[in-house]
Length: 457
Image (cartoon, rainbow, N blue to C red; front, side):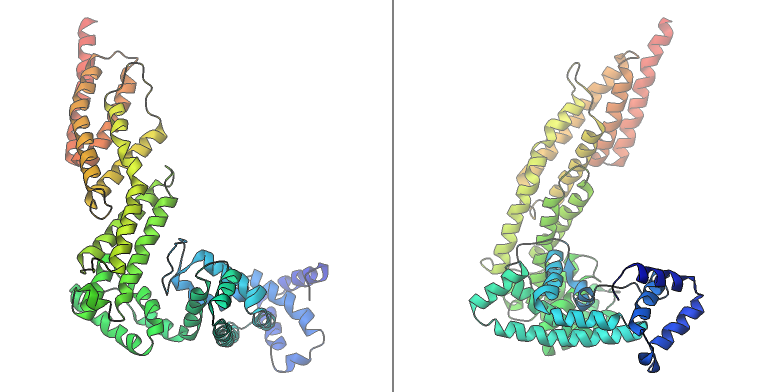
């Protein structure tokens, strides 16, 4: 029954019934004898609509979204250039959904939608979806097998709207075929406790059956493990523990090379995220991404010995260069902005709130770049800028306090506000104790400024 005035009237009527009456009617309509009820389809659709609106049964989800649900734990928001098996971008997932409806499997989607429209029970809905996912897995396997040559694969990629379309389709097939295995694995995977290497050995034992019997699902299982680990260093350490060596070349000969692949994919996502969130308003996200990139790059450089001329080492070096370019300009411009804060020229306007916010965020960036100088390939620049900023604060703050002592009532508020900002900046560079000391010194300078005025009065 198409939605219209009659559908709306029936839906409104069913909403006025008691919950018990709606439940009894729905049970009767979906029973074996219910198939013989006259105008069953016309009645059932608005009844289900009323029950969904009132929260008595789950809201209706588009059938193509239900078919793709096994892929969801492995979907990332960043649209990266490098395709890593097991990782599907949000953009590609949306394209897969559209492709299923239009070209990929429209009959399966329509059949599932028709069945769901006549079912109210959650358990029955799940069973129908499960059957449709099995059918879709077989269908997509046939589609992929027919795309044997490069021309056919390119055509398939064009339909999906991305160069990695065929590989993403392979990932979808694996997620569908291994969904029960991966669901069970996810339920049995927990955050590590106790000594880390012992916990990682237990994780490796948990992974071994998949690594041996279901290698196509190993990347997916590793991503589920990564979600439970506290940091990228622990994840990369898993490869060394699993193979019992830090030799990157030996790790690359085993299925656990996928740990390195996935760690590099994580680093690339952090870089893309940082590049996309560079505005002042998005600065916290930017800083988290830069820090995350540094941590992942350090893990790859310290937990395993990557082959100097190997694929992983070359890709990591390229990502480091790209991240360095992403943050370089902000760091190069930092010292002049701090100089403007601590050594203002005559009649120079005070910094506005957004400028102060950006300055504080970029000081955080400087500290991150200094902590991960090698990983972000900015060793020399971060050291030089840190020294310049430290010297400016060290020499400029006392001069501003002297100006506060000599200031009149008109200029004093502006100087106090500027010095308050300097306290915040100094805490980032010298620590909280130093910031508290400077704050006290500023209060003393302000009091000394009032005393001469009181004596002259």
